[in-house]
Length: 84
Ligand SMILES: [Zn+2]
Image (tube, rainbow, N blue to C red; front, side):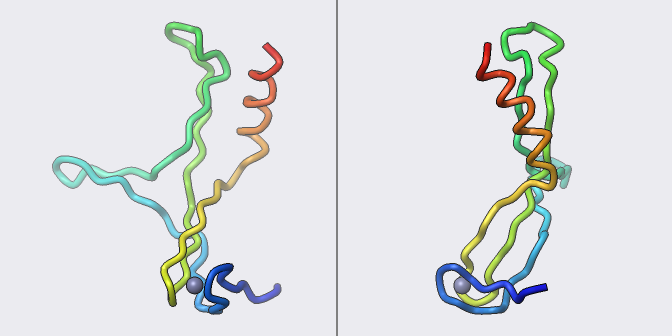
């Protein structure tokens, strides 16, 4: 696999696939997620799909890029929504 380089500073100190934790009261935490509703107009069953965000962080300059593990699943719901 090709060595990743930072798009900003060119460093190869790239940390991949880091979890992004949201922390609340009582140290309660969960992964940050993007969320899409297949049926946003529905009152209860919105056909919600969530994908956890993963961060790629440069260990030199701190540039952060966000990705999701399964973008195809999000795209499927998003594109269906656009046709309505
Ligand atoms: Zn960098």
